[in-house]
Structures are given as C-alpha cells and as structure tokens.
Image (cartoon, rainbow, N blue to C red; front, side, top):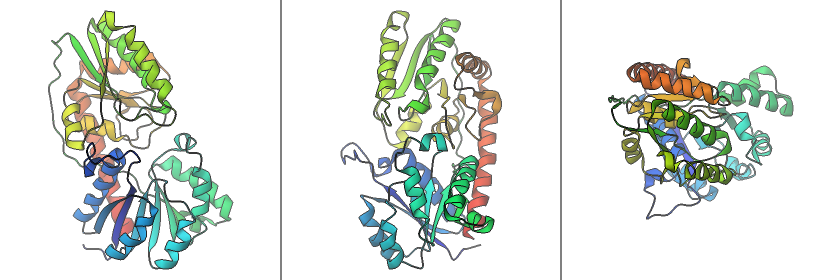
Length: 352
C-alpha cells in the first residue's frame, strides 16, 4: 500500500571529505550506509524516500524546497537547535525528526548532546527518534522532566526508529589448515570500542591454537580521544612481532570494497562497551564470517556475545566461533533477519 508520506534523510558530509579519496557512498561511512538501508527499505514498502548529504546546515532549506517532503530525518547530532527557528518558519508543514544513533554512555562523549537534545524540543513540530530501547526510555525521562510533558506527549515527541539492514547473505568455509589466524576489529578507533582488550584476547586465542595472528583494524578513523588506544595497539604488536603476531591497518574504503575485505577474515570481533546496532558485525555476518560481539548488540545470538571487560570470556567465545563457524553464521544471520523484519514493520507503521 502506497503512503502519502514523503521522507527525506539528511546527513552531514564528513569533515575530512576529499573528492579523490572518498566516493559519494563514502561520505559519511557507516552513518551513510545505515541511512541508505532505511531509505531503500522505505521505497520498497511504497513510502517515497530520498537521501541527501549536506555540506552544512545551510543546505537544508534548499533540499526541502526541492524535494518537498512531509518528514525530514536529520541523521545524528549536527544541526544546532537555533537553526530550526528559521527552518520551522520556512516549512511549517514539515515534521522534523532528529535521529540519535548512540546509547547514553557513548552520548556522554558528545559535549553538546544534552544541551542540543533539550533545545530541539522547544520547537513543536520537531521529534526526537532513538534507535535503541534503553536510549528511548532515558531520553523520554530527560525530556518529560524538562518540558513537563504528560505520558502521551512524551511518547509522541520521542519515538523509536531502529536500524535496518538488507538481508543479502553469503556463506564461506573457514580454513583451519593455514598457520595464520585473521581476526578483525573494524570500525573507528574510539575508547568505548574496546580494541585493546579484544586484541589481547585475540593474541591469547591464537597462542592457544599455536597460530600466528593478523589483527585487522581501520587506521583511517580515530575519534573521540582514540589516539591513546591506537598507540597502545601499535605498541602491543610491536612487542609481539617475534611471535608472528601483527597489527594490520586498513584505510577506510567504499562499502563494496569493505565487504570484500570482510569476506577474507576468519572471525570478526566487536566486543565494545556500548552499541545500538553494530553495522560492522552485520557486514561480517552477511559475508559468512563468524562473529563474536558485545552483549550490547541487540540482534546477536547470546552464545556469541561476550563481556567487554573479560578477556577470558572473549577467548571462550572466539573458540566457540572457531570450532563451529557454520552454526555461528547461520544462527546470527537468522537473528539479524528477525531484527530487521521487526524494524521494517516499525518504520512502516509510523510512516503509513
């Protein structure tokens, strides 16, 4: 059934954009991919949707005039609240949605987050959307108290719009005969991503197997005071080269190339301290790579979810993924499918 709603996703172009290094699909990396998945999902469900990557918030008015949406979804925190004093007057018929992508522990690292989220609610046709149930509850607690909203208004002004992921799955065979173990911990290097403990656990697991370790990370994205983490990773493996354990740095790359890289891995690690979805593990499992993730990831099979403070638990989960890779892949692909099917229904209900 076709909806009369018309959705426009707007993202901010990455600050380090370079037309030589970055294709258009690499402008906002994971955030772009996440928004594009939902954009395509809405169109498939008969809800007109489009996506635009803005240089800055001065581009918003022009895009709204061009596309004439009923709903504009601003992905993540990048538009200062005062901008909506102008935008709401120019486009009073538009419903504006600020969509948050983090849990509260991660949001604490964004110095303006609580100020901006509170400021957004001064505009009546502006809605806050969360992509995780806990963040939804906590944001409602904050804004209900700030604005003295009743239960109904709180639920209307702060809504749940979780992540979607396309169900294009592959399979592969884990080669246990080679003498090197390729374990990846991809994604931007940030303190809450927990790279260092996972690296130590991966070293311990490789030593138990009597194999050399290649620990793969993304060198091109260090964020939110992640430089000490990166320095410690480099130092850790510098001292382990004599044992044949190496840190392999990969530059950020367009999605299709990244998926090809994922497919070459033996196991994927994402045992971070805070997650709302984790698109990297979804990319890995989509390529048939067994995964170990954090207990924070909402769709992961709990048998493969590790405590981010316990390296022994991470090693045990690595052993399970290594010993029964096919079971790991099939069950996690199934669980991701269940999660994304629910996501599609939630978005469809809201915009239909």
